[in-house]
Length: 535
Image (tube, rainbow, N blue to C red; front, side, top):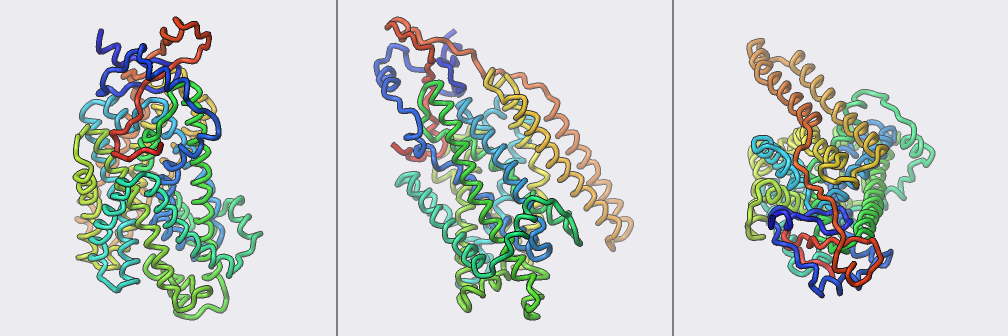
């Protein structure tokens, strides 16, 4: 009986008590009444919620996105801008679902997965989530290493080590308050945006062609389909769903129905604004690449660079504005992109480890462990293969992320659509239909393209027939297991009920309060990353 009382949700908000939380305060605690009476609602509290959406949006500006933007612009001009628009609209939908899930349940996505799935499935999802963090971190780490190589002419593998150390130092800023960390990241993003917007204002891409590229879907030219899928895969990242659902819990949400609803609304607006900024920067990168590489008077050296543009060779795009200093400023922009996104990757790794495994670690040890896991593949490849090997690793990482997406997206869609987790506060039928259609569409496109690409490679490679047969024997059963796993997650019925019907606050009723507003005393989740919360 006592445990049931501990798991009760006292209030009409949609939050639940974490299974491991301490018992709720007594309803007769006068401090609770004092807090309730002094809760602030409305737009004056909006800025208290600003932060999580911008931190999450950095994943849409990481070096992996920059590289796919550069390649799409150099090969297809402005024709693939519509892919970025659709990708970020879908990103806004699923990121808002992740934020609402966290605010409404008091748990983040990985914690709900731990509560819902059997132990074998739970550990498989955890392992896949860790692989997703590593894959997302590879372009960020390598991009930062390329930037340090351009600036200081140090080997790429040394730059990878420096990236790991600097990320831990920057995360140390949280000791002085989360606002300072968020301000520092905002400055990095501003530096990156200023570089490409400055070049865009100089090359002046035709506005008519830009709008046609955004709103008229086209897939003309050699490799357009592959580049479009690469753009989409770089935009929608699985680790971001775990990250956003956890970051919103670092805010002190007012303990009332209206407070929870306001929080969901504010997080949606903040995410929309942050992703709009990300959209503009992505458009600027594609436009600069498309305009510069599409001119008729390109030098032979620049033509060669445009035909095989990479993060390590794209500084020539800024020469029109910056001249000889273009490589330095480009490296600073790339450094800002890589360093800011590696910070969010480290946070995602912390939340995934804490949520799935319920590990209790000291913050510095958890940061160090997450960093070591993430940078190890990049370090090994950069030592063995050098810059070219590191560049190819970015492509492999994007393919891994495409495969990983269903194992974060499907649980999110199911938890948000079902009454077992959110009760009557589940998504409306319109949101359910739209999110499932978009989600399954992207998952289907990724699976189809990666499967056909593998089969095409298997047919056209120069390996002996015995080698092809052996690869087929290994890979095709794995693909079957993958598809069966996706189907299992889609059609498995959620059995763990975490939503509990709210009850009225009897103390308020005794005092003659006629308001039907119900009170939720679930504490904010200060345990997640030890972030000093804004007051």
